[in-house]
Each structure stands twice: as structure tokens, then as C-alpha cells.
Image (cartoon, rainbow, N blue to C red):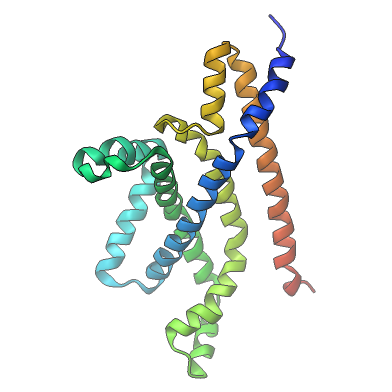
Length: 224
């Protein structure tokens, strides 16, 4: 069995690192949009507005029940066939849209569970001093729920970061796409994909350590 081409791998590292900003930008943008959408969905799931609740349940069921890759293909290749105006959408935008909707469905359930975990007496106490239900949710319930949901949301961001590797199927040259192109030119597929795997691994380890630090910080007020 031939050995690894270490020299090729070392030379490939700066090439792949050049695409890290795009990978992080896609994951970060999708995380921000997904967090906003998931919060709205979670609040609605708690409030249970009759007709709207059915639509939200359907949304969550669809995006949790179908593969992310299929959703990306639907947005990038399928929807422009139905809505020609969407032919202008590029791969990066389609990837961010797909990641946003897919992970918002999962995050909504986590945020909903975090909201429900806050004792109902908190809402009653807020309303007893004159707050409306909306004010109580914004000022009392959601801040407490955020502490509960934060570690799980960081996990979703890590999953989202790894899921950006699917963007290369839409023609986006990010880390995985760059590795694919380099491997196609050199035929050193194992070395190329090993390099990109190691870079993803390092990024995830950094985020995991950040998650632990965040949990420690959030738990300070509750430590005895």
C-alpha cells in the first residue's frame, strides 16, 4: 500500500484554509436566520394559535422528516422550475436558505422545550405586576429559556457548520468543494479529503470548547 503524500497534504492546507471564511459565513448567516425563525416558531407552538399552529407543525414535520440534501436540491434545482424568478438564486444563497429552514425546524422544538421548562409562576408573577403576556415573554421567560437552550443551540451550529459541506453539490466552492477540485486534479483523493476532515475536526473542537465555556458562564448565577 503506497504511503501518504505528506508534502501534497501540507501544501493543500493553505488552499483549503482559504475557503474557511466562506464556510463560516454561510454557517453564521444561516444560524442567525434560523435562530430568529425558530424563536418565532417556538413562541407560536407555546401559544398554539389554532390555524397557524397546524401550519407550523406541518413546516417542522416536513423539514425534520426530509434529508437536508433533498431540500437543497429542491431550493436550487426544483423551485426555479416552478418559479422562474428564482433562477437568479445562486448556490450560496440556496445553501443558506436550506440550512436556515432545515435547522430552524429542529431548533424550534428545542426552544419550545426551553420555554416550557420555565415555571408558569414566572408568567403569573409578571402579569401580576402589570406586564402583558408579550412583555413577560420578552423580559422574563425568553431570557431564562435562552440559558436552557444555549448549549443545544451551539450543538446545532456545529452541525450546521459541518452541513455546509453539502453546498458543493450546488456548485459552491467552499472547503469540501475545494478539496474535491484539488483531488480531481491530483487523483490524491484520500489525502485531499483527509486534510479537509482534519480542518473540520479542529473547527468543531474549538466550538465544542467554546460551548463548555459558555455553559460554565451561564451556570455561574445558579452555582451554590
